[in-house]
Amino acid sequence: MRPLLYLSTALGLMALAFWAYRENYATQATLREITRLRAEIADLSEALAMQRAEWAYLNRPERLRDLVALNFDRLPLLPLEPGQLQAVDRVALPPPPPAAGLSGAVDVSGEFLPGEEDPL
Image 1 (cartoon, rainbow, N blue to C red):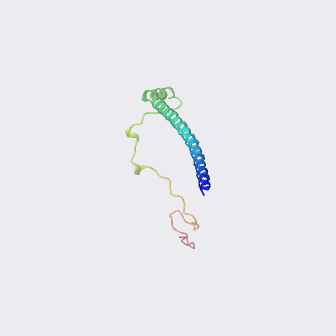
Image 2 (cartoon, rainbow, N blue to C red; image 1 turned 90 degrees about the vertical axis):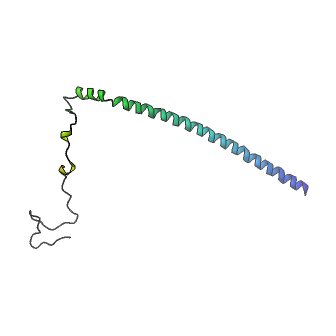
Image 3 (cartoon, rainbow, N blue to C red; image 1 turned 180 degrees about the horizontal axis):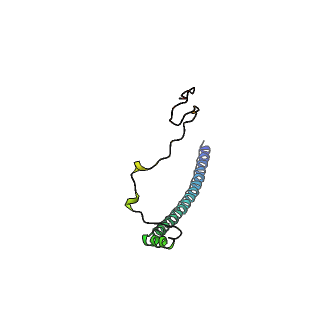
C-alpha cells in the first residue's frame, strides 16, 4: 500500500511541477506582451501629442490670415460679419418630397381634378 501512495504522491508532484512550469512561461509571455503594449501606447500618445501641437501650429489665426491674403484672388474669402447672419425662420427650405404612392392628378390650385379620388 505504501509504494502505491509514494507513486501517486510522486506523480502528483510531477504533475504540479509541470503545471507550475507552464504557468511560469505563460506569465512571462503575458508580461512581455504587457510591456510591448505599454511601449506602443506610449509611442501612440507621443504621436498624438505631436499631431495636436502641429494642428494648433497650423491653425494659428495669423497664419490663416496670411494664407487668406495670399490666395484672395483665387478664393475671395472675407471675414464673417454679424450682418451676414439671419434668423433660422428666414432660411428658404426645399419643399418636402412628394408622398409615395400619390397618383391622383392635382391642378395648380392643389385641388383634385373631377373624377379623381383622394389617394389617402
